[in-house]
Amino acid sequence: MKDKKIIEPIKMLIFTASVILFVAAQFSNKTSGSKTETSNYNLSGSNNNIRYFHNGVHCDNNQYFDKLKYNTWQKHTKIIESDDNGSEQIRTIMYRPIIQYLCGGQRSDYQAEQITDENQPYWFYSYENSLVNYNLGIWDTIDNSQYGNGERVKYCKSNSEEPGKNACYILEKLRANREQSNRYVNLWNSDSLYNWYIMPRVRVDSAFVNRPQNFNKPVFALEIYDWNGDLFRQVIVSARHFKCEFDKIYEGNYIDTFCTQMCCDSTNFVIAPDNRLLSPYGTDPYDKSIKCKIDYKIYWYGNCDMWIDYIRIENEPAHMYLTNKNSMLVSKLNSEVRRTMHLCDKEVNIPLYYMTDKLELNNLPSIRGINRQIIQASGNKISLMPVIDYEFLKASIPDVNKNGLSIFQLKDYISDFSGIKIIALNYETKEQVQCLNEIFRIPNIKYDVISDKSGTKGNMLLCQME
Image (cartoon, rainbow, N blue to C red):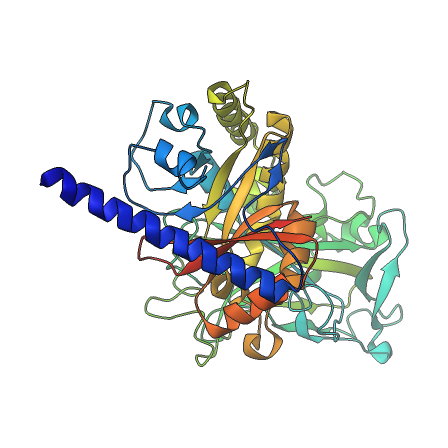
């Protein structure tokens, strides 16, 4: 009797899963308008039938492969040293601490040039008030100098007869101004966990900086405004910040990290973790009915010619991994991949994936770097597979209900930019289902429907983007 009580739920589970897959396959074929196989992926030299997500504990993995032809069954487990999955031809998708930490890296480059076309990728990584005023000597230009690399930047030309006359704010009202304000994410990706580094990418007239009499003359100021729009820090950058030694020659190149070690300089471009001014308790940063007034303004003093490309803001993991290229973190990630490769079945060459979730748009630069390193270290046998929460990913886009985030943009941001080819896309709401309808119409995206029985998510769609 006891065995019967155990067997019956398993039979019901198998029956339910089969019905879900049958209905999903029928829906997929009708929607796409062409014959589509929703169960077969050709990945890394192996057919990878990715089917079902669950968080239960099941030991008889062979039933999924033999009876249902599944070879991926997601579940939340403790540490497992055995190779149960490999013995039953089951693929393994893993969360690993070093990868989760690095995937929590956030970087945003807020462009200084004026952007008015909302069809332009990352248009929201810009300022509503990006000043262009030829009378004041301020306009956007292509920097074709030896340091510019053809980048479009904002150029500020000083008045040679009366330096300082044209001083003014050149950047105000950042559009995507909620990206550093979400303290309710998870243990590795919340915005209140790490230092935030503010790094304006600027170059100035080298002749001005190298004159000793200009040592303390201000060039520009960074003003940081909190959630309520109150100024809580002003950082004044002077000529001396472009030289780390008094007698050093500044060449006129772009820099984003300024020298502060001379003269007991208190200039501070770092916002400490758990700073409630950017992420106050009890505030939902994704509730667009609540107005967020966070801003990173740039004031130009007009004392010298200045070119500004963007204002970069990144947290500690991104700063250590992407900017400083910390050798310890790089080595730890390589060691993790080598350990995984050692456990991999070399004869079957089963592909494996590292999973990460709760991604925001400013996680993607770190995701790209991590994915590249994993692919290189594994010989293209392992990669990242992010779980995309559609609502979470698009939340930092202003007027998101009007602008949205289409699957074509999703492909641009995640696949084309980050190199990610396999994603799991969460869908529950009507808007998310509309996004799926777009997916079904794209011929070069393979997909599979996944049902999550853990009770924490709705259904999911697995996409292979080519």
